[in-house]
Amino acid sequence: MSAHAILGSGSYAPTRIVTNDELSQRVETSDEWIFTRTGIRERRIAGPDESTSQMASAAARAALADAKLSPADIDLLIVATMTPDMPMPAAACLVQTELGLSADTACFDLNAACTGFVYALDTAWAMLASGRYRTALVIGAEKVSSVIDWSDRTTCVLFGDGAGAVVLGSAVEGSRARLIGSKLGSIPATSSALMTPGGGSAPASPDAPKCITMKGKEVFKLAVRAMDDVAREILVAHNIAPSEVACIIPHQANRRIIEAIAQYLELPLERFFINLDRFGNTSAASIPLALDEARRAGRIKSGDVVLLVAFGAGLTYGATLVRF
Ligand code: UT7
Image 1 (cartoon, rainbow, N blue to C red):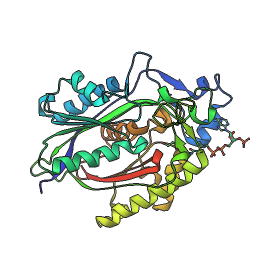
Image 2 (cartoon, protein in one colour; image 1 turned 180 degrees about the vertical axis):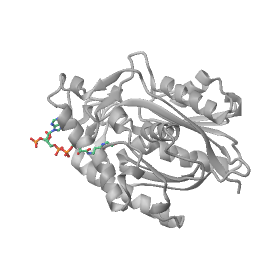
Image 3 (tube, helix red, strand yellow; image 1 turned 90 degrees about the vertical axis):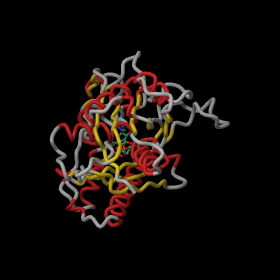
């Protein structure tokens, strides 16, 4: 079976910065509370005319440029999102048009909430491994601000908007860079901990809130357990010791969740790339946005083993091991 690798990455964040101080003028909160409990200082919020597909397209263009490939090289496009522009068509089809991808590109959205990008990466990898697709664009993009109740201080301080993308294709001959492994899962009967109850086809949906509702403490515990377990499982499955991982890109939800995982895996916190202080939780965009920043900041070098690890509503979880 031919090997596949991440050939390039890109990201996009809206220009508007909303600080904790600004939020504390809208709801009863403070920079001190938000920073101490989450590690977040500020987040980016999309403008009223800015959509998920536009942010996704901007990130994808940057990823194509980084991979030195053109839209004509792409025959598979997956957008991981829980905030598509509209229920249909898929945001991926809008991105296809925006980028000028050919008509024989397979385009679809994938929703695994904040784990979406890791799910999409595994899906694209399996499709490439089938031999029926050559090169994929895998994007995580979210306008989370569109499903936030801005009067609910328990959720509105946590999230932000943005997009990140990678190009996945055949590993370059002679290069060690490749995808090593992937593991996905979902903990049953945990959906009420984190959800957007309204806006869908459930019978109670018309009256239910169309914004994120969350049992924060329950999610916190589930997240630590799920990410710690899946990180261990994937490392054992590929016979890689935690100390051999050069950089961990965790879902950027809460600094305290990341600190707990670092402690359980007995790894120094410096090994984890953290940018949630500037972006908050951008859901499916969080990992590709952080991955792209980490690469551009020189935190990932050629030959490095990198672990991506995420959790999200469902409660879904997943991990990917990549060598760059
Ligand atoms: O992608 C997945 C997204 N979700 C997550 O990752 C969430 C995981 N959970 C968390 O990150 C944490 O549980 C939170 C940051 C959401 C909350 O932190 P916590 O330490 O679990 O706080 P808490 O919910 O126990 O709230 C403590 C107090 C409460 O007041 P009382 O009942 O002690 O008087 C809250 O009402 O803090 C209050 N509170 C706030 N105060 C100021 C809740 N939100 C705020 C706020 N500002 N924004």
